[in-house]
Image (tube, rainbow, N blue to C red; front, side):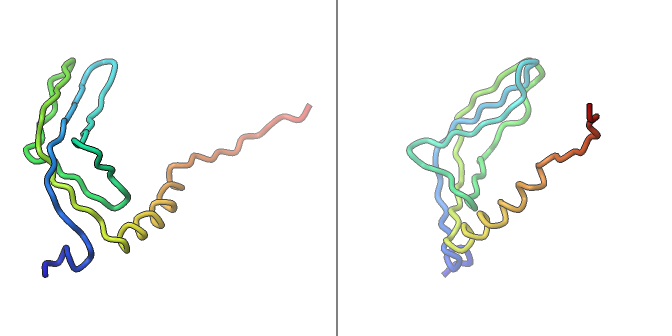
Length: 101
């Protein structure tokens, strides 16, 4: 029994499409897995032979394989629990004086 299977994790490969855009309108990178696969909390996706950054003003779309590691039930629960607390770090709260008329 491997270390991953002891935690209920499973690994498999899937084909995917990688899109990277480095233009004045957009700077983004997206990975779309083939099939009806849904990534859930705690899952890991690693693209094999991922492309580098395209030159400024260009968009790159390539086909690659991705290794998906499914999280076990305990890891999925932990990720959901911790994720809620991590989200609060994104909040921006400010207090400003308001004039009373």
